[in-house]
Length: 297
Image: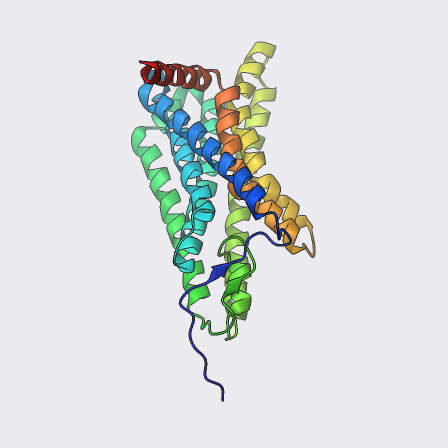
């Protein structure tokens, strides 16, 4: 029999196969992180300060900006506890995925049932949908974190990754991790496929409704209503689809996909919504001008 000391901390080794590039990567990711915070914070302030944006669509967009501020912070800001990092990563990721589905449903109601939109998307309904998204994220994160850290870790404590994700942590367990691996794969895959299916159903119905509009101007207006959100969804799910199509992904490819999903998508969301949406663009521009005037005075 061999004595083992249970681990109480993990050391993150960073992005695989990037030794010697730490200073360059730190500068790049610091700039992206700052830009992400600034862009999403401006959108959030614009939505709160502009009365014309106090609708359900922009209520969900404001929450998405909050998620996009918090989500990259999980991996870019170090936590003392690996379990805390893993929990908040899956909580925010699952809740944001649910929010994308809610926003798809909001677009569906706006295009397919415009006369009943205000009746269906009442403030109470919007809040309830957001609460459900949060509960789903919390339940998912609790299950995954519990199954991962109920195992004993008594060997190496160096995680060969840039944050505490399940596939990177489980190989360090000194007990059988097969059950935790299955639960993690099934839960993450089932939730992702369910949310993606709901988005596809909503946009299929939206596409059919847009094609039935007789005037070209009406089709253009309807398409512009949801095109911004559709682009954001493609940016969020695109990296996940890429990694799923690879039968044996290498560590560097997996890390690049995670970086696209965790770091670049929150930054791109702020660009997409501020540049493609005229109302948000004008409100953000007005907020930015007021900030500059305040600073200059």
